[in-house]
Image 1 (spheres, rainbow, N blue to C red):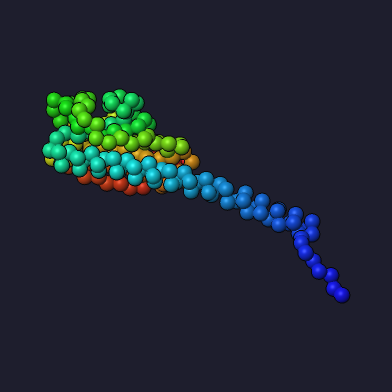
Image 2 (image 1 turned 135 degrees about the vertical axis):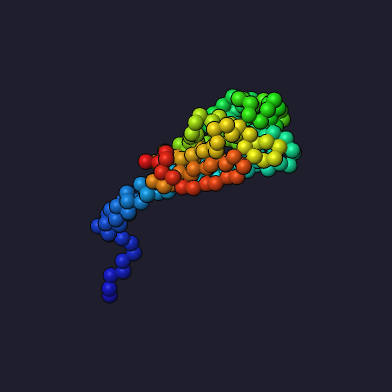
Length: 177
């Protein structure tokens, strides 16, 4: 009568665990980079959604509408690292230096888990006129970059709002290591 084996020997188990450890040690860094890339993408998409919403509301309402950072949910007193809100803007002109909060239309949580939004020219808000054009356009188009710590090259998102209010997004290396 032959021997019936009903399990693994200790050597087979140790070899299996060693192979599994090697595979995991190779996969984890790539997985972390993939997560960081997806965080950068998500932050960029959320930013595009917020800007598109602000522009659409300005056209729909026929009024000045602004996207800005907020620390308290009631004032445009934050940065792009804080929460964001879209508000009707009661500023005197389309080119006023600061937004004047009228009605808060919608809010978004700020970037999380190592994601960040950076701006060129220290722009702290995006204002649209009643026609959907860029209101605070004295410096031309506005460019914001969404990235995440640990993302790989060319995984960040650069979002540009042109003077006509049209958005464009592209991949960039800015903010990624």
